[in-house]
Image (cartoon, rainbow, N blue to C red; front, side, top):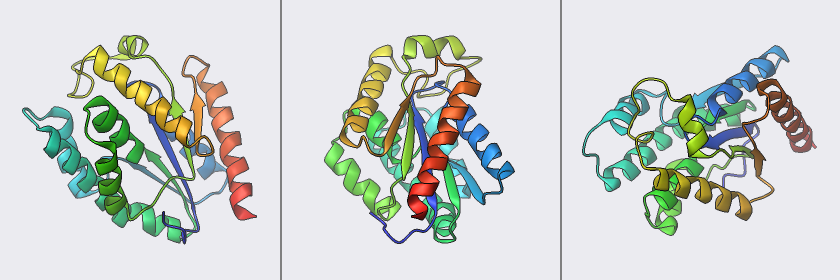
Length: 210
């Protein structure tokens, strides 16, 4: 794990339509209002490489599991090099919509790719950078489906069994690192969830500054 970063790295995780993107943007807006220097990114995305591969990963046809795994790793490597590490080394707060845990949950638990291999690949791609805190939104896919509007992408179109494996995978990952993961339940009011997240982040800021 990268241990020389000065900033605070926050990630948001969960299955499709769980509310993580809404909450990550609310947190970004509030921290900016409070005067913090914040970088907001999404994985995959933001970089030229990430945006290009994102379209293929979400909407491409006949994408093999191997290509999927390597494409996500490539997107993340570029994101870390262009945005995440530079921002953390400048002492900024970085908020990331999805990160390494998505690969472990979706390609590992969901697709059945060997987790040991995925973690080694991810360590290489991220240079060992790990979040200081990860907000995990625990939501059933059956409930999440009610939030779908329009055509589904490749991941959203996967079976209920697949998404159940992903959800269970996330909870398994959280159980292994309880000091990093903070589990939230999207059935709560949006403002209530936002306040919980903000308070947790402010606590983490104080903790890291000591």
